[in-house]
Image 1 (cartoon, rainbow, N blue to C red):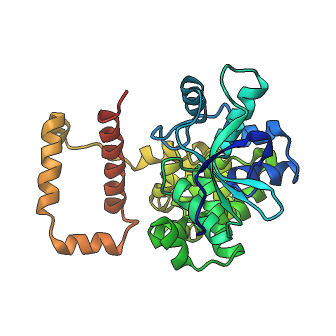
Image 2 (image 1 turned 180 degrees about the vertical axis):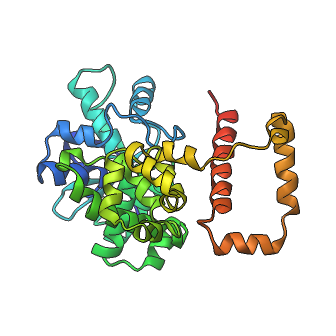
Length: 337
């Protein structure tokens, strides 16, 4: 990556938002290659809620912070081209906020914005900045946008997967799952929705779950295909989205499958649920937790191997559900609210 100059205060009217930003590209695909400022503003998250489980800065909280502090703390990153164009590589949202404040005469100095300016930054350097800032950094993109960008790097720009992993420090399996989920969502979900305006990127995690071992096989074995899966997602038969994990059990059970196709996975799982023995039901929460910990500590290696060999078994799926439930409870206990 080329060396950057020191921080400069760049006039915001000289800056071009980065149309290769995956969030902006989604809107370009819907509205053409010349989206209006209002459309760009929406693409960058105006009025939206945080898609990342509340752990990152939302658009509106960032906007409030900038207004309160009369400016940004971290400089944006800009690429100055040889023709003089100045394109925002990192910080599109902050530039949009500055422009909004200037247009609406919000008290403060919004004519210029602090920026680290690179000259003729090459694609490798641009990719490194995006990946570090938005895939593993403090300002992550939504999951669909992450997957869209990873797909672009691997399949359009033909960057080797090993290099992408080096850029963002991710795990190969997770990156491949995201890319494959993006491909499946584009191919099957976009096929079954009424029009592009109905394309709901918040349903993306269902397609990530679809990549888990045994899920597709269970769908095919039950006589369905991935277009059917996309319809289930669109029609909210799969809701919440993590119930994708239960599809192997649901589709292999005649009664549960009927309920699923009529009322959805949440009701179908009730058919599969077995009431706990009275002795367990009478345990206090603390006693139950201690019992679970004790059982886990006593598990034999042969049993672990069986679970690993069959990750779609009911026992393996229950372990995943317990992990998710405990993680959610832990996050609630340790939240700063």
